[in-house]
Picture (cartoon, rainbow, N blue to C red):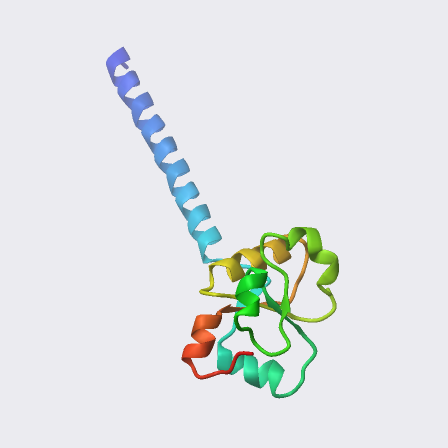
Length: 142
């Protein structure tokens, strides 16, 4: 067999090997992408919060992660205020044995707070989003 033909066959084998590796990687990424996430955070609407927690007096901590000034300007009944900026240093004030429902103004800081809680090992976290959504749906603030 000529050197040219051997070289061509070697190149073809190399292409097949690279293509096979590529297909395996694509399949692995597709499998990983299709797995359900194991996030401890669940999103909850204002109406769902009312039926699952408030109306039935289910044990939980309603955590307002806005600033103290924002909290003072109006908050959901029974909410506790720990701003997202101080949450990591105040985790001892957040019980681990009951669900934690977090909210802020628009939903950005509540998502940050949920992530902080998840990373700290909390397992039952609900993100209520923003108080603006709460109020727009007709629910009261104090």
